[in-house]
Length: 470
Image (cartoon, rainbow, N blue to C red):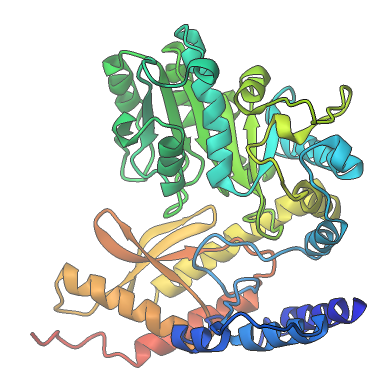
């Protein structure tokens, strides 16, 4: 059995050590990958080590270098050494981290990891928490607790009576909400029609007067969802102004802090999240700024009773431990991996100072990237770096805005083709732009220089000063 594990270790080591030299973009095409992996189910098997060798060799050039320091597209961390190693142990131990009885040690480790996260982010110590597959399920978990609480205030027991005939709940959101919020609302039975979009200012933040107007129109229970750094420009809603207004109206306030919530760990940047601790629930991802391997989302809920009521269950064959924490009381999964263990390892490796340094470093690198690329001929800054996010677009003299949109996407594709860096496109205020997102602990000044040089080379190969020929 150890031969397969030994080969997997060697392949993983080679992958990590080769990140700096390997192209960031995948080199294999879709058709090539399908040709390699599509075949009839074998009638007979093969040795475990041969299987691992075959998979590694055939998948290698179909992987993005997102674990490396030159990946600036989606908000994806790189996997700290301790967290990656801990994740290997989690898979090897193979504990079902749903009950203390099924994995005593991992239950206690996860219990402490949750307490450390609350302390790091300076959130209420009395709040409950859950480690989920990602922010998608963290939203579902937190908003299920919100659903229970706001309907209970309206004298409706949703866990017993369901939603048929229940008072209609209004979900007020920043108009720049993430798609995972919409899916959570759909999964919980509220439906898209429950959304009320809150107008934002030029910086992408909800304006207090917009929230007041929306609350004045609401006739039933309300859940307000605010952004702790939106995915395009890193905008944080003015929580200190908004949350008291929402609370006065009896609304539950939920915070989408998929990556931005970790700015609370930085003395330099935490002012942008002033007042966020007044909310009722918060979500964030460990596999983003904390740089633990996929998958790891974190839900934190002030109202422990509502959280437990929305998630818990009991059955005669569940071996509940009265004095221990059973994860199944707080999580939507029944069978689950011990994803809190890599979180514990990462926090133990970094400490409070290490997390702060990593956050500050990523923000500084993002600023250097945005200003450096934005200064190139044919590029312009759409949104200056805020925290670890910024936007840039590309243009040619004489083109229409629509043509510049297409040109921006073309430049992004050309940059990614170089293999030197990897960016993604987005639409902001109706126009296409290139996202600059820095969240990887491995990113260094040399990576920033290589990325700017790659963009400079691509733009130099295109005559951006020439009039566009129609």
